[in-house]
Amino acid sequence: MKLINCDLGECLTPNQDEEIMSLIDMASIACGGHAGDENSMLTAINSAKRHGVRIGVHPSYFDQENFGRVSHSISTKDLFQLVFKQVSSFKTLCEQQGAKLEYIKPHGALYHDMMRDPDVLAVLCDVIHAVEPTALLVVQVGINTELFEAISDEKDIQFLYEAFADRGYELHQLIARGEQGAIFEDPQQIVDQYHYFSLDYAIDIDTICFHSDNPASVEALKILKKT
Image 1: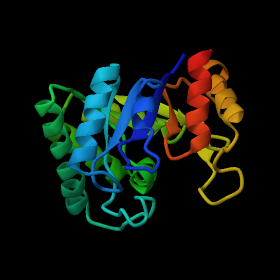
Image 2 (image 1 turned 90 degrees about the horizontal axis):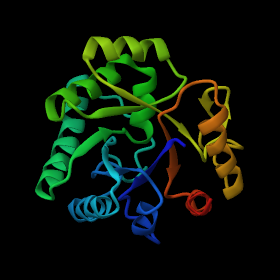
Image 3 (image 1 turned 90 degrees about the vertical axis):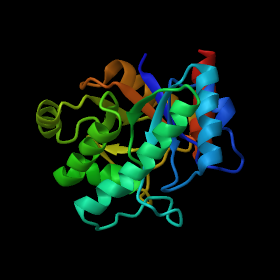
Image 4 (image 1 turned 180 degrees about the vertical axis):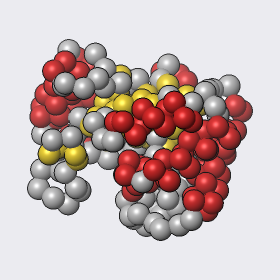
């Protein structure tokens, strides 16, 4: 079965991070851009260590008001500094706890901008080289595949290709949040899509994402754990 990743450390109420850690393989931990602070990062890092979960950093535009889901038009220089600050600070916390930063997964609007704008993608690759050259970069499967393969060779970056268990699709494209069918609210539907991506999808996938802010996704993880 495919590796399960989940966005955590987002200071949600109720906070189910500790329970979720026991159900996943990879934790993408918020690092202050859209959510989180030093305490929440340390809590999530140590929880991931206890459960043997791979640790990733989840940088975003600095925009907690919109939970990082609004795109911002900034220069590549400023974007580099924005992401570098989040990722390098998070790596320092990992090192202090004897943990390893294994991957980077941008959050929200930054993720989607990376998928469609080669300049944003290049910034993420440059941050990896500057902070943790062995880190993998999580990208959406089935989108601009030839570009990502070329960038992988050019920038010497290894990608993890992901799909979303709890999001609706039109072909390979995610249905935009706010539109009908964008977010699955039935745990069984999420479980079924996880199995589809794991077993039947025509393109190779490395990891499948569940969102911790979707109660149905948390229930789906519990169902999968029992099977």
